[in-house]
Amino acid sequence: MFDWMKRRGWTATHEARPQNEARPQVETAARHAGKEAGKYRLLYEYLERRYANTVVLTFGQIEDLLGFGLPDPARTVKEWWTIADMSTGEARCSDAWRLANRTARPNLMAQTVAFERVS
Image 1 (cartoon, rainbow, N blue to C red):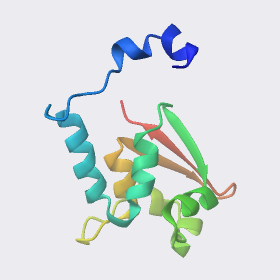
Image 2: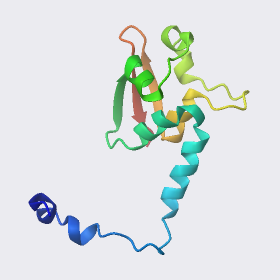
Image 3: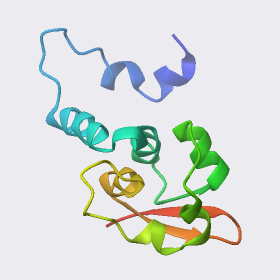
Image 4: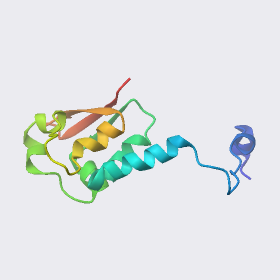
């Protein structure tokens, strides 16, 4: 075993859970939220797993995470990032950060978005 794991107490606090032990509710809720994010699930998972209160991504990084391009309004209309269209029944990009308990603050000139954790 790695020495740093021993120094940090990894073996004592992170032992494997027995196969028959139930999974925590938090994990089940996270899996459900990922499904709600639809095709934006990978962005949701990325934001959900970041410990930082603010995560800044470029449009290119977001597209790389998603595996497809952002729509044209995402690059030109600030409100695309801040207003969720609740009239459609399908998953929206905003679901990804909303389900990860974050808000989006775009900088269109720099082509970046700051995702801030909601307290």
